[in-house]
Image (tube, rainbow, N blue to C red):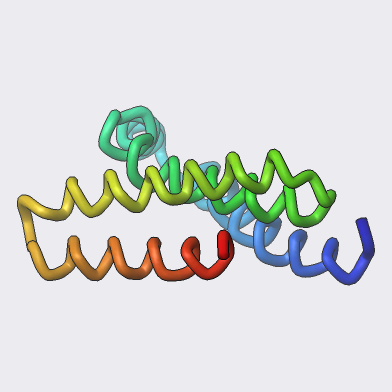
Length: 112
């Protein structure tokens, strides 16, 4: 691990995490319950949750040079993108194809 990789990691993951926690703490109890229910929903976990978790593991694996963690992150990222596209297919078919392309293209370049 080098410090040149650690600084962007802290900025990319630390600032949004801090802002989410701060926003959550400022909510009233009814909004907090609503947010928790949204975060626990199957749709959220299988789409946004997998994408964020995959990106985090891929970045963490890259930071510590752990190739297996990086690959697990890519799998979660691809799975979350695929499930997001399926979820979006019912609402807008063009956006679902765009999601697939946006997720598949960078993964294809990373794995080749």
